[in-house]
Image (cartoon, rainbow, N blue to C red; front, side):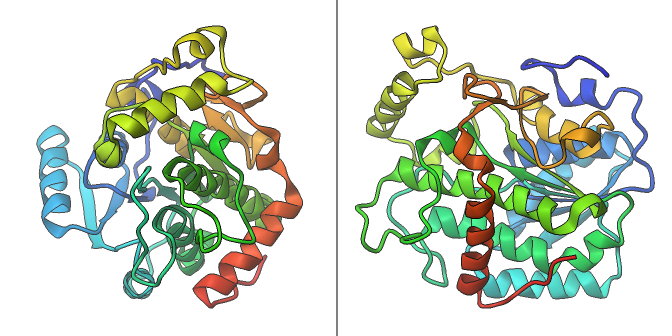
Length: 325
């Protein structure tokens, strides 16, 4: 087993790896970690469907990737994860192509935005980060199940430590809205979704939840000085944080190539066969009670009852039931 860590890059993960003949689908592929993941996977020979909501941005990202990897085999898809009709339309069109999906990387997301709602009336962070990917993944499941050793990678975050999911008030209808609590709920949901996928499909597929680390991307476009200060105080207060983090609220920043490394590792390595459903960080399996800024997690994310209940609630909210294996 190769030894990787917080500074490992995507190219180091894929050194010597041949992905020819394998097809990946990546959401949020028009910038940041999604774009870097597509670039790296393409450089190893994979064909990739790049998904994003903005046609101009995804065209520009594809051009940048092809400039770096002239042989890149890219397909572009327009899907807005905050709009169920957009998700359904894309999924229907993709399935008609009868392309098998070997790996789906649910990378897109929003963070710490003001109180907003999706096109369908869901609270924006829960609606986009969780419900959008929940619906997309399940609608694409026929293509995923025909893939070779299929995997589903869900981008989560150390932000799961801000809050577990709220099954009674997912849209903040009776709870005072908090940008960070909302983000935490959505990131915990990503992990519960990962766990329930594994419970439902067993050995038929692998699924992992990934904390990428702290990277400067468009994800932080809503951050104000007040929200940054609140985040620092939350980091200081985490009982499982490192001594340095407790004192300073400091978070280690990563390069884009290192930030995308854990999700690329999760999508391609053979070293995780015995850890299906795990939370990952810094290219390592998560540690309960460890430093959240690295690969530590809080135990509530592995609660099976919560994962089952969240799945049922999600089906109710998207108004569609999905059979298990």
